[in-house]
Length: 438
Image (cartoon, rainbow, N blue to C red):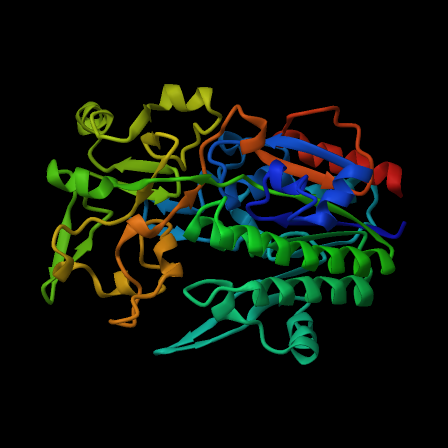
């Protein structure tokens, strides 16, 4: 065997992985190889789970407490960070290179991978010029994206996120992954296939659309496996979470505003959140909200206010965060968890006419939290709506039900027992596997 390909399949549940009706290719791998539930860390979101999978550590240790960061020194929220320097811990490829200095790794479309010690890196990185967005990817070596673009066409950015998301972007990533396997022959390749995540959030995990998309994804995985095997690589699939049905959002920043804890700037009649000046505000991410306090004297008051909010299940202090493995300086002074069927929206305005203009656009940089409503479009106004009730599936909480966990499916039989396997054991399992495989 020349290599191993680890593909993260966003939103793949243990139930779906075993479904011969909807995912025959994945189910076949699961039946002949390994299929085990994986218990996620809190929060069960993309960046936190990818950091745990690549380090073997909890968010309390690697510091990726959500898909975003609040940088207290600048007073800014930043989502979807690329830099590996934010994770000051060894990654899988560092562990394997320590055993074999000649070991080569490709990391494709995993977050927090740029400027890492991996030999090959690529991720989406468009260039914004005024009102124009130029689809592109950052790559190392520099010519890698140019080679992929020449062979596959430009990266379909508008199919990767937004109201036009489709399987096209995941197919481009899969094809680019195969090209890297064929042309550069890394020992370990890590890639990310996000497609299934979209419809499960928009329509719900058991919806007709989600099931149809699971079947389309499964066909792509079948092709990816065949191409990987032809290039001498064995396929390992792992998801970061399962999605669960949700009934309503919680607009936590509106609660903070109504209790005098939010500071706003009004410009041109529109309200803009001032994160650095607010006594307290929430950076939201699916089913977790990090509440940061610039005025820590109001910590007890804020916690009491949030505990009384309908739909909130827990408000974790620093001490309580420790029990969940999320007590890192990057976390909020308070971490808020909803009831199982709820999730958090970032909205703070009370009058729709005073919402900031970017609320109606795809803008992952100015919103202080993840906005799944960006996958919808208002057909009349031709913009992103601000109706968070549209969302029917979410994730982030950690369930004790194995069918609501993540899943590991491998065509190599792994020594993992019947599970559930803690997500923190994935890195050592892969390192040990590779030692035997090579």
